[in-house]
Length: 327
Ligand SMILES: [Zn+2]
Image 1: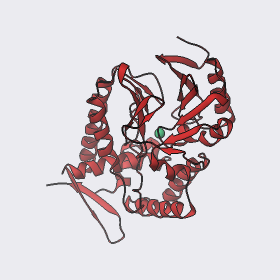
Image 2: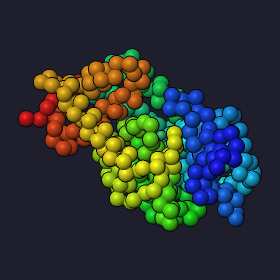
Image 3: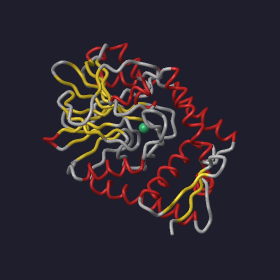
């Protein structure tokens, strides 16, 4: 049932509200869940005037007003989902809920930012990025950071917590702070960016909590896929694109995509020693201006290939990691 130009009912009592982002990924969905007390909003969009106006209109289209929003849940901290959290909270006074690891995104301190900057400088050096490429990567990251205005989380939520009658399922991989919402009785999941029908979401490289090492993002994503596969989900309502009506088939495809990417990297390494950037630039020659994305894609899968024993790595004197096939 369509209720307006950009709002449609996608499950019993759940309305999808499509918001503009201006990003390459296209529009993002917020989900509106009205109840007797008001409305729960899942994800806040980018927070631009255009996006906030679309959200406000969406809430009106389902017969409510924005100030009736009592709960905001963030599936993860990326700008297209969490950028609008501060503005939405100011306008509604709603409780803001998300995974505790969101603090890095929502309440950065000068110290946490410095630790993150140092982590990424070390990481990009180890990946073999030249100075100009490292600068491109850092400015790309800073641009996204600045799109998320600082805001306090009112409550952390993790596995099995209940929020507005939905059970929280921890679904890391795309981001370590990623969670989904699950309604058992009709096996409906609001899945953020964990499972998107038309694109395979990146497992983005993130530092661990102390900013000393990195999260094993692809291995984490695989565990999430296996967990979701076991849940017999009827429908996943994603952050982008159409509802996932055959989650089992899509999860199978995404697991297979990861195996294919590892096979592609193994073939590209061949008999040589390669850096992450050697591999990223040869696999994605059309995306050289987006080093953070392609480095994440390659490094995450290389980490996984090392874990399963297909590839080994060692660092040279300058701290640059080189990968070769395991014998
Ligand atoms: Zn995301």
